Length: 324
Image 1 (cartoon, rainbow, N blue to C red):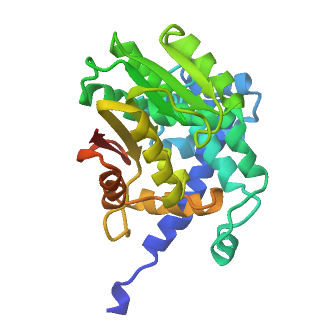
Image 2 (cartoon, one colour; image 1 turned 180 degrees about the horizontal axis):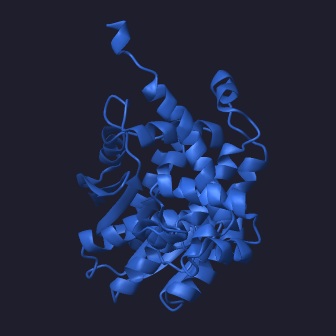
C-alpha cells in the first residue's frame, strides 16, 4: 500500500509556486505584449533588451506551460495569452497577476497570521488604496460582469448602487447594455479618481457617478438594484448584516440585491479557490473570509429579502440574487 503513495501531489503544489513566478516575471518583462508583435527570438531579445540565453530559457518554459507556441526559433502567443496577457486586450488579466505577487510579498507570513489571528497591516494593506489594486480588480470583474449582463434582464431597472465598486467595471458593462440604467459607484476618494478614468474610457459619464466615502458611513441614495461585487468577503458577519440592512432600507419595492462571491461549499472544505481565498482574507482583513451560500441566504432572509437564489457566473464567481 505504501508503495502506491507517491510524492507527485506535493511536488505539484511546490512547483506551482515556480510557475506562478515565471508567469509574473513574463508579465513584468512585457513578454506577451512583445511576442504578440515580434516572433523571432533575436528580435524579441533586442526589443526587450534582454540577454538571449536567459530569455530563451524563459520563453521555452512558457511553451512548456502552454502559454506560448514555438516553431523553429519563432515564438507565438497561444490564444489564451493573446486574450488575457496582452495589454491591448479588453480581457487583460496582468494587473491582477501582479497584485497577487504583491500580496505574496506581504510583510507577514501566513503561518504567523494563523498563529496570531491578526491581519497583515504592513505595506501590503496600502495596496487597497492604490491604483494597481483597482486595476487588478477591474481585470477580475470583466468576465463575471459580462456574464451577469446576459443572465439578468435589467431593462425595467433605473438606478444601480455599486457598493465598493472599485473601477466601476460592473456599472460600466451594465449601463452600456441597458439604456435606462444609471449607476452610482461608492468608493474611497482616492479610488474614485481611477473609477472616473475607467468610466470616461469605457463607459458613459452621463450615466455613472461616484459617491466618495466609506460605504459603512455614507448615506445611500434610493435605488432599485444594489450590487456587492466581491465585497462581502472583506467584512465580518456583523459588518455584512449592517450593510445589507442599510441597503434594504433604501432599496425600492421589487428591487434586487446582487451579490457576487467566491462561495464555499456547505462544509467549507472546498472548492479549492474559495478556501485559499479565505486564508488570504485572514491576512488582509479584520474579520473577512469566504462564506457559504446558506450563510449569506440566512442574513438576507432575516433582513426581509425574498426569492433568494444562486447561479454560477464564470470560474470561481457565483452570483446570489435576492428580491425586496
